[in-house]
Length: 98
Image (cartoon, rainbow, N blue to C red; front, side, top):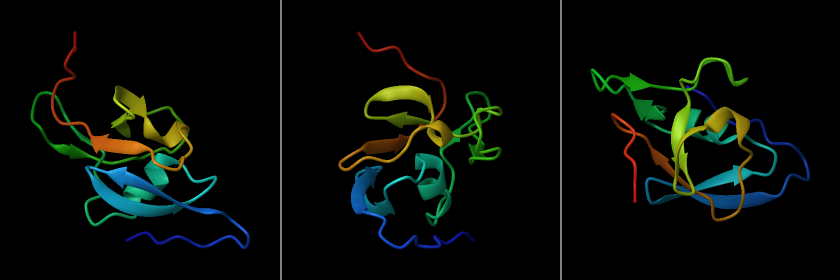
């Protein structure tokens, strides 16, 4: 559904989404990269496990929550991509790790 309009001179980098390498450009948000994937969902709801995808892209709606570099419930629309970043889709209830 979505595709990237490349900016001239933008640095290319690689991050992983659920363990799979994904190409991105510096300056993009994690949510923008998620929306270009074949499965754009960033999380599933805690109660019904229904898929949710980035929506407002400005940090208001919280639909874009994902696990970024091990931190759960991170607003992916507010985080710029970095080389080697690890992104995981967040499924169900957030768990507390000891």
